[in-house]
Image (cartoon, rainbow, N blue to C red):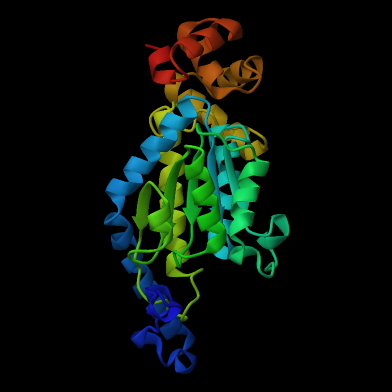
Length: 296
């Protein structure tokens, strides 16, 4: 498919005179166009749910999640991976974002990196990809060689593969087990896929990481009980969570949190079961890490 045929590269007739619009008109049309993103994502919910389930099953057997992409798509993958650590207390190795061109590509474009098919495979090999892992290829255009190379390598060793694009019948969809095609239409600024396409990709990544983490016990209800309290705000959030679940006062919650070495999960079980840290840890282990099961 020629690049001119991609919806992400088409001109948006509503913004042909973008440079003549007032600031208010620009933000209004952007807001109007962004509203289309939610409905576009809605159409792909079955595939998103299937993908999240695959990821959760991978996590349960010690597998990892890899996002691979170039440019905006790659940066979004790196961002989602980085946020999993403080939000869910996951090991940094559990969810990883790979971007064509490496870390420096987070800030500056690396010439030719996204066009290198071999580089996608090479980056995954460097991280010792196994068949237990899941690889999510992200490309708004749906045709990035770097992503195709990564997906093909992942499939060759038996890893599950997922493709996220913003064009129908995209090329990367043909290289993955599950295809998620969120078609948001032409951008306000032609070809600038950091806009609607980027928003759509971020929404999908939010769903994949959050739903899969919930499925492996990283939450209690809608509370992030595996949060890492690495600053004052997160310590207070941890205290609030403990109080919410156990109905103790803040002073007591902080006292037990310290005894639990700042593990919110352990603190909740210690209070609910009136036990020590080691017993709480064993109880959580038996429950598969699910707090609700552990305190019943």
